[in-house]
Structures are given as C-alpha cells and as structure tokens.
Amino acid sequence: MSVPAPVRETTAGATRPPLDVEALRRDFPILSREVHGRPLVYLDNAATTQKPEAVISAGADMYRRSYANIHRGVHQLSVEATDAYEQAREKVRAFVNAAEAREIVFVRGTTEGINLIAQTFGRQRIGEGDEIVVTALEHHSNIVPWQLLCEEKKAHLKVVPIDRTGEVRIEELERILTPRTRIVSVAHVSNALGTLLPVRRIVEIAHSRGIPVAIDGAQAVPRLPVDVRAIGCDFYAFSAHKMYGPTGIGVLYGRADLLDSMPPFQGGGDMISSVTFAKTTWNVLPYKFEAGTPDIAGAVGLGAAVDYISKIGMENVTAHEENLLDYATGSLTGLPGLTVIGTAREKIGVLSFTLDRIHPHDIGTVLDKEGIAIRTGHHCAQPVMEFFGIPATARASLAIYNTRGEIDALTEGIRKVQRMFR
Amino acid sequence: MGELRELYQEVILDHSKRPRNFGELPGANRRAEGYNPLCGDRETVFVRLEDDLLEDVGFRGAGCAISTASASMMTEALKGKTRAQAEALFERFHDLITGKDGRNEPGTPELGKLTVFSGVREFPVRVKCATLPWHTLRAALAGTETTVSTELTEGPKAESGGA
Image (spheres, chains in turn green, blue):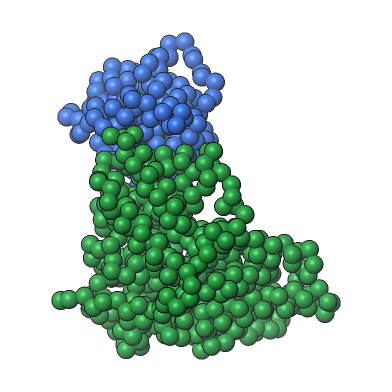
C-alpha cells in the first residue's frame, strides 16, 4: 500500500523578505557569550530555546511595576496583574487561532498538559479494555501519562508504527482504531527525528469514527503556524520555553465543550466557584483547571514570546528553518560515515545523526569544546531509538537565530570528531 | 584541545576501537548488565569467580569511547585479583576520575594503566561513562540479577560519589 503524502499544515510562503538573522541575534543576549573560548553555537533548540531580551524583561518588568496576585484583589496592582495575565491568554488564543480565550489553559508545560488530559478526560472516559492510540515516534511525555492511566484502568496503549524514514504509517492508524479507542494522542513534530506528522489527516480519520485527538505541539509551535481549528484537534499542548518564552509555563488548548464536561485536574484556590464542606462547585473555564496561584510572570513572558514571534512573522520563521534544515542536511550528508536518522519527506527543525563507530556522547563532548551545543542521547524517545536499532543519536536542532555559518561550524566540528576517532 | 587530548588519550582510543576480553566469557559464573539511561549504553560484565579470585573477566555491549575503554581496561586490570582488591581498585579509580585525593590503603593494587582516565575529572558529565563497567562488575560480584543503572549508583549529579 502506498503511503499518502503528508498534508502540510502550513502556508509557509516566501512572500516576505528573508529574516535579517544577524540583527535578530542581537535580541538574544546569551548568543554573544563564548563557550570554552569559542563563540557559542547553540543547536539544542528542540530541548529549549534561548530567550530574547523582550521575554527576559517582560517578567522582570512585571515584578518591578505591576505585580500582585490575580483574580482576587480589588486593589490596583491586582487589577493590573490580572489584566496582564489575561492579555497573555488572549495573545496565545490568537496565536493558535482558538475560538475562545477560555479554551486556553495555562499549565506548566506540554508534559503537564498531556497529564491533565489523561487524568481528567482520560480517567472520566477510559475504562477497562478501552484503548488509547499513540505513534511510535512519541516523546516519553506522550507515552508515560497514558501508561499510568492504562495501568490504573486496565486499558491498553496501542502504537501506530513508523517506517524507516521516520514517517508514521497512516494506513496502519486506520487498522489500529477500534470501537474501543477512546483517544488518539500524537506529536505534531517529532522531537527526535523532526518528522512533521499529517495531523489534519489523523484528525479526519479519528473523527470519522468519533474519536477525539490530542496533539503534542511542543516542537511544532515554535516552527510552524499552528491553527487548532484548521487542524480540527480536540486538545493541543505546548511549552513556552521551546518557543523563546520562559520555563515553567505552557498551554493546553481544549475545545470548550470537552473542557466543560471534564472534571478538574487539581483542587485548590481559584478553581472553585463556591466551597462549603458539604459541596464545592467548580469555577468556569479556564479557571477550573488553574488551581492555585499560577506562574503569572511566566504567562506574561509567554505573551512577550508570542509578540516576538508574531513580529518576525511565523511564515518567516518556518521558511528560515526549512531553508536552514535543507542546508544542514546537504552539508552533513556530504560527510562520509554520517547517517541521518529521520528522513521523512516532511521534516522541520531537527537533524538527528550517527557517525560510524563513534558514539554520540563522544561527538557531543568534542563539539562542546568547539562551543557547539547539540544534544546526544535518546531524546526522551527510547522507542524511536529501539526502532532504528541504535542506543542514541546526536541531534542538532534549529531556531530562528541559527545561521549557515553555524551549520558550517557544526560540519567542521564533526570533521574534527572524525579525525580524532579515526 | 588540551583537555580533549587528556580525555581521549591514545590508550583509551585504542581500547575503545579494539576492546580486550570482549564477548561472552566461557565458564562465567557471575554476570550483570549495566545501563546508563542518559545515553542508552548497555554493557554486560562476565566474571569467572573461583572462591575469592576473579579468574577471568569479560564484557560485551555498546557504549561510548570512554565506557568501552573503561570496560576493556577494567577486565585487564582485574584478572587474577581478589574481590577485596577489585573493590579497592574501583575506589581508587573513582577517586582518580572525580579528582578526589586518592585513598591508598596498604595492599591496594596500583592503578597502573588505569591512570589514563585521569582526564575524565575535567568532564564531570562523563564520570558515569567511566564508572558504568565498574558498577556493573560490582553487581556481578554481588550476585544481584537486576540491571544496575548509573542513575541509581551515581546519583543525579555526575560528580557525586557512589564508589
């Protein structure tokens, strides 16, 4: 059976002028530092991105000028803090084109977002013998929360396989879905391989059988225009820190009717409408899912990150990363003994590779001394490594501030590794 | 490049490319599997233990240059040693690569060629690579069947103790 070509979810075009990357790099203070006496070449962006000054100062400025707890004070600072926090929510809503701001729940990150789905939607609707479907290229954060649920409910986790290029075998998805399938949860972009999944197609297939779809968007949101309504998904989770925002905050988008029908995640302040010892009633969305004082300054920082990306233009970000990935792929595949792991037709942002007879750990150590930061290991995707029969890969991952010069430095660094271990 | 050359000395590169005592050890009566979840490295260490003596030691597995060379040189260093000597040697080796003042109890075998691993001290995140085979050996001698993991033996920080 032939594999249908993945449908690109974006409208990346080349209408705008290309990014002025050198100017943009000056927005990121850390990029001017040296590592081991060399200019920093930061290529570990799939792990986390660096922060522009606008994001760094957004949180600090709030603490300096407008900080108080939100949603409960009548005083001026509380009003200002609440406004800033809710403005950030609105920015995120517009950024992913959700229908309503109440569909945007602030969480700690993608991991917490997926755990929230599993522990609320999942615990409510999944029972013994039911099935949860993921793919073989998921990050552990989209595997383990479901395994915990399966253990508790005696449900089953089923896995859609990938092929040798790292593409999900969509035709297998159709076979794996059954009347017992309660949710499909998939990555939008693979953190280990860079594969862009045809999420719109996956949603179509699942929805045609009435099965909701959750998407781990951690690697997609920093790289592609994401429109949750165009994708049609039911849930979409992502992290601020991978999109130039602060750590400690992320987003779970959920369709309002689903969120409304779900029980709360954690209990505490702000998530209730009234509490008596006899009965407690839940607050409205999204506050039902935001127990306790949230990361207020983090949300404001996330809002600043959204502003920053929007100012550059997401289509420019996508075009830059596609262009740079093409360049990097061309440069690295020219090196003898180098194997690219993950050669899907639709890929973005991530270049995983191995070198003959040289362990990724040794590659990482030598490159580090050149000031080049890459990730080595299993990338929290051990099933992917197992599929390819390797313990680990070296992974270069891209961001808006990376340049062809940095890719050249990587290429030269790999040559040095190869000379060293010749 | 200086620190890198210290880390990847010729002897280490040689052992990583041509590991000695590699493969399942015939007649082994002790074995354990070591695992480093950070990089996915797995090594199995085999011992033929006669009374208190490590008559023969071997290993198998795939790892980085540091862990492979460490395993290879460990097997050479330990053949013919007693259990107590093996344990003492691990402690000295651990001190060497973590940059502690070396313990040198009377009767401790000399580190000998193992001193080539002194460069590891400049690379704290690589300590676990060098100690993986030793922790695995210790598990093999203890007769425990479970997989030994560097995360349990070395703790969350690579430079922390554990020997």
